[in-house]
Image 1 (spheres, rainbow, N blue to C red):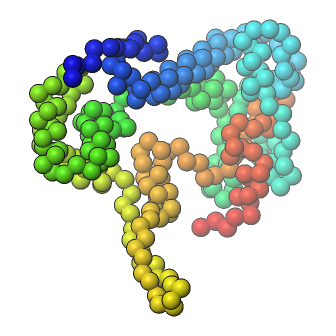
Image 2: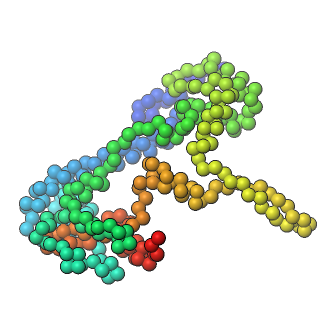
Image 3: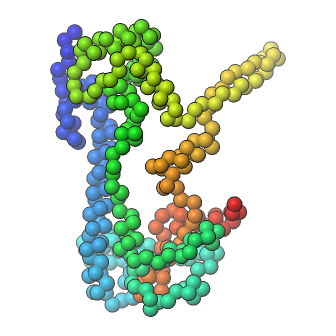
Length: 293
């Protein structure tokens, strides 16, 4: 059969693909473009908040302004409505300005007070509002080849070939013959590095160490005839899966285990507000009734 010459241009990234390769590329490309659009919009919002911070401090005399939504139009209205989230302090939190020794005269408008749960054993912190906003900016993306969906295969094409081999249940001889046909007709910019069955086998072995291994258990069930029957069962323990997530360098640091309270200084006192799930009252109350290790 003649080689396929029809191509399709991706509307998101502008790259040209063959009809057979456009389908696997389209879905992740749309997700990537949508994620980049959200990051750019959020970064622009933070930049506008930073540039208008000095004008907000010098042009407002009302001490309750920080906790009131703006009535004007423009980006600043979105900033005030986003950060000025009114919330009542739970009586079980036992949080008060006098009890914490807060000196109103030493604080600036919009300062953020972070109070950790007593069982965490951490001191309270006070930081300027702009530093608090800057800490929520989108993190810079640093490409890492080890995080590619097809790792440890050396390319996406290698991974798709291995997937096809598994689905077709090809033998060793069939795989070697298939590889010879591909090498004689291959084209395109995506590298194809497999040369023989041993290359594919070694990559499969490397991939098996990148995921949690299956465990085998023998399940014994009495049959209709009254005789016991044994069946092998393979599974992955949930506790091992959770442990792997905690050890992952890209996921583990984002787990939060301690409830915190956030307070925003409005010129006279600190007003409690909710930012993340672990800053809400319910998360705090759960940790109050949890025994510390």
